[in-house]
Length: 336
Image (cartoon, rainbow, N blue to C red; front, side, top):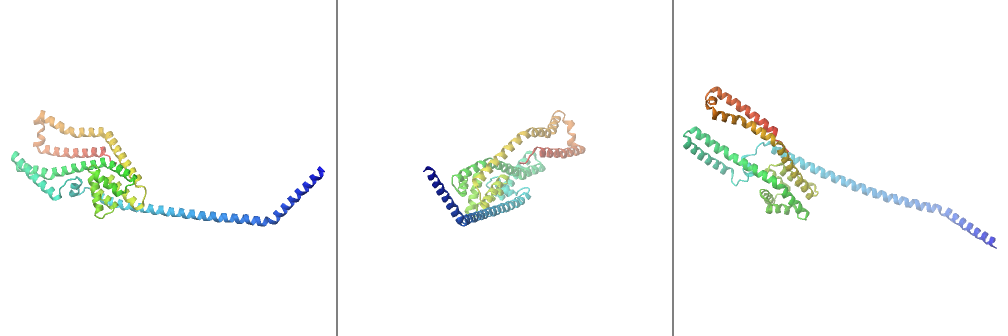
């Protein structure tokens, strides 16, 4: 009985397996067609996804090329303006007066120089009684001293701006990161910054109120502060306005670069201080020796001032001394 049941079960199993194989054989073409159709649908969807990705990549590439071209055009325009400014080896006296932060015009400067020259010439005539000496003193104090004072004040103001400018950039970076727009950040510097940065940024705000956009107003900063650092700032603002980007990061990088340049200048000054001291000693040595000889043996050296040959020797010595001083000056001065 047990053997019979086993045979029956085996027969039933074989019958089921045969029925399944027969059904699979009958339905194989349909199953295979459905599988192929599903694979074709997947390939079509993948192709569409690839086309969309390729299209997005092409759009990003086109946008990047457009931004790159915009940046290149901006840099080219700014470079041309800088070349035009560099052709002017020395700015006009009117610009120097403005860069020095003096509150008077060119006409007032000439008037002050004339009065100073006349007063100095009158004092010299009273003291020495010689018209030639008085004329020389008047020329020195009327034409030389006022221009030297303007140049000194201008250099001092530019150094003060360069020292305070990175701090102003840091304040702008924090303001922009906190959500303030660039206009408000510039107004904040113009109201709470240190001189002379506050005055220059106030002029940027005034230019905006008169109708200029931010890049144009910032570009005018370089004409008032002829420093490469001010030019870097205007370039960053112009590029951000035309090509976009993270302005706070760009200004932060600019601030870091300016501080690194300042540290490099200080390091170079420290390393070249020995050469500068040697140059000063060498340049002053002939005058010191001449003064000591005059104090100890005046008759020995006075022949240089009384004889024609002495005049020629003094003239040739002055020329050679000037050449040597200029050579030493170029050797110890470094541009960063």
